Image (cartoon, rainbow, N blue to C red; front, side):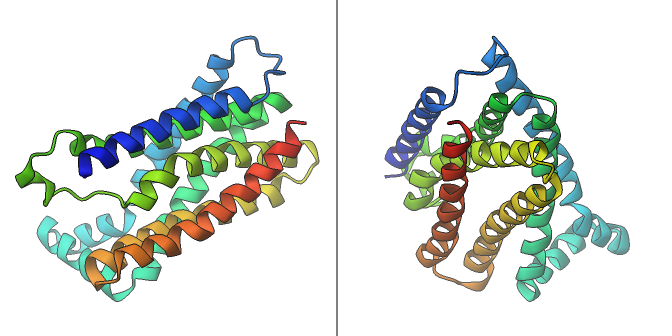
Length: 242
C-alpha cells in the first residue's frame, strides 16, 4: 500500500508540473523560461536555508540554557506538548516570512508574466521535498513499513497541486502588488496565508504524534482551508495572466 501511495504521489507531481507548464503564460519577454524557473528554485532554496536556521532558535536557546542535547530535546518535546499552538505559530511564521520575502524580491525585478514562472520554481522545490519524503515507501520491506512515517492518502493527492497553485498564485499576487503600489498589503496577505498553512501542518503533526489526535481528521482540518486558500490564489492568477 505504501509503495502504491508513493508511486501515486510521483505521478500526481509529474502531471501537476506538466499542466502548470502548459497553462502558464508564454508571453514572457525572457526567451529562456528555464532561467526564470531557476531563479525561483534558487530563491526558494535560499529561503529554506534561512527558514530552517531561524526555526531552530527555540531549540538552540534550550541547548544553550541546559548545555545538553538530550535535555534540550526532552524540554523541546515537553514544550510542544504544553504549547503546541505557540510552537506551530512560530514555525509557521518563520516559513511564511522567509519564503514570501524571497518570492517578493524575486518577482520584483522581473516582468509581469515572469512572476508565475518564478512561483513555478518555488513550487518545484516544495514538490521535490515532498517527493523525497516518499522515496522510502518505494523500497520498504514488510518489516520496515510499520516504522515508516508516511503522509496520508489525502496529502499525497493534494500536496503537489496545492504547492503549484499556491506558489504560482502568490507570486502573481506579489508582483501585482508591486505594480499597483500595494506591495506591503499583498506581502502581508501572502505572508499570513503561508504562515497559517505551514503552522496548521505543524500543529497537526504535534497533535497526532504527541497528543493522540485523529490523523484522518487532522488532515481534513489542514487540507480543507489550505486548498481553499490555494484556489483563491489560483483564481487570482487566472485573471492576472489574461
